[in-house]
Image (cartoon, rainbow, N blue to C red; front, top):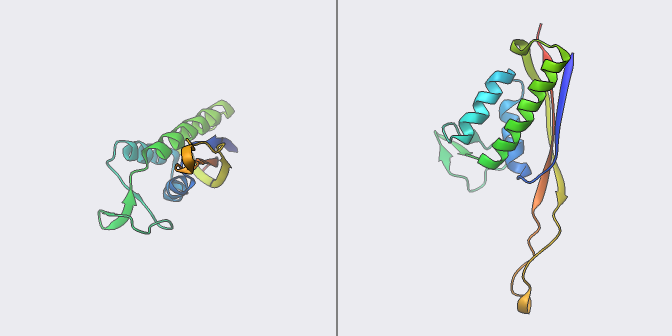
Length: 136
């Protein structure tokens, strides 16, 4: 059986979300939840594998503590755990089988434009899709 959860139009960086997703892909669900909670507490850094230009090193590897993206990812992980429990799956055997992060839409451009001095800010959003399944 498979349980799914999605987060659409999340106001977080898709780059940070992607790095968290690569860190937890293939892990058991309880390990992934504990990893994300330790990132929020700034105990464990997320290794930046793709977007690592000008990133400081944490424990020998380029890494950061993306707290906001980790908080949204934690909500999605808890949601998929609740979905799996509702379907009657065994929670101890759940493994993250698929996790995808996409760029979302932009916010409406806004900025104080007196004399055209301030640039318009366009915050990006991210879309996350997550699936777990039972290991045999």
